[in-house]
Amino acid sequence: MTTGVLEAVEEFDVVIIGAGISGIGAAASFRRDLPGKSLVVLEGRDDIGGTWDLFRYPGIRSDSDLHTFGYEFKPWRHEAAIADAPLILEYLHETVDEHQLTTLIRLRHRVVSAEWSSVDARWALTVEAADETGKVTTKTVRAGWVFAATGYYRYDEGYSPEFPGRDDFEGLVVHPQHWPESLDHGGKRVVVIGSGATAITLVPSMAKGPGAAAHVTMLQRTPTYVMALPRTDKIALALTRLLGEERGYAATRFKNIWIDRAVVKGLRTFPKAGRALIRHENVKRLPKGFDVDKHFNPPYDPWDQRLCLAPDGDFFDAINAGTASVVTDRIKRFSRRGIVLESGEEIPADIIVTATGLNMRLFDGMPIVVDGEKIDVADAVAYRGMLLSGIPNWAMAIGYTTSSWTLKVSLMCRYFVDLVKHMDANGYDHAVPVAVPGMVRKPVMDLQAGYAKRGQPFVPKQGESAPWQMAMSYPEDAKALRGPVADEHLRLGHSRTADVRDAERRSSRVR
Image (cartoon, rainbow, N blue to C red; front, side, top):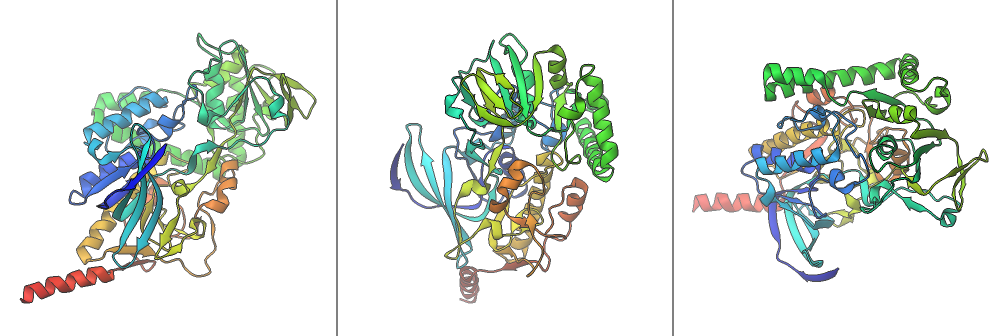
């Protein structure tokens, strides 16, 4: 890749960074509701889709139903409510076409730094734009607002701990985030390290079909809660037949929001009962005599970490068929032939998949500078779950961890539109949250999962009460983000440049 010369500066009212599911949804919303604003979407990769284009491992799918993971404004038309990545990508491309977003999206445009000037209330984004040959041109894009839809993890690397003896292993080691397109696991012995959503997806996918592995072993250090759910929502199909596509989708979305809310609240309020219920369902689906308490009895309560879904119970079916198994133990080292456990057992393997998680990183790690001072994002506090204290005119798209990600993003977009309209109506050109001195702070993602704990030093904080607390409930957010757009915690103002422009306009009227 070669670098080129600096190009001319471009100006936009709103820059969206990222063309994944959040960025595309935001672009459609802003184009519709802020028609007078100039808008561009900058995407660093070669195609749209974000997560759903990046990950290529077998069986990659949503871990939420598409009636809530999809957009409020675009019905999900497929029968499968739990959908594979190709269907989700198809849905995103349809959204781009239907809302005429193609001309707004610039691929291979990676934002590498952002500098805010209070003098003129503008962001100056340094952008590396690559053409199809790999030649890179550095551009400056100026914006009144930045909407960062960059996700919460590093796109260039996944998390993979150091395993003793890794270099001794004579087979292939692969991380799901970097799945080789040519990988053939047919007839191979596969060990998947991990027990999160990726592992629960990989195991049945690699254990079935014409190119199935000889056997797939899921090796976990700690069990995870796994629940089987129907891949097809029969009630959703009935509502669509009865009410039509749009109304049926809206009714299903409403149904699923409240069912999901009730399940999460119920499991967290009555964790012992929830644990017993999940165990009962696991026992019914697993072979007789299977050690459920060893392999499916986590040491934490339900929803301290995300529950994993097995569409139509495919994960349990693979165990019943004998094509997959679960081992709960710690890794002592890799060997030439596989993995040696602390118990002394050796699991033979031809392929080892390290489904060990993600590395968290907001805004692709770019430096953010406000009036010459570099900002440590980890010191900022989230306001209404989307703006950050001390950073003017900067919104971030962070979705739910206990519900569908995009449910929260849709509410954020609505609040963003209301805020921009309010500022325009009152002559403001910048907005910045001001954190309460001495407030108690905790990580913005309040989960006990490994990736969340590892990412705590790098992510913003939240407070213990509104508007600084990250609500994890759609009904709560729907109320909070529909209220007055401004309060005593949000400082709105005019830049000095704006004052000069106003004075010039007044002077021209007098003349």
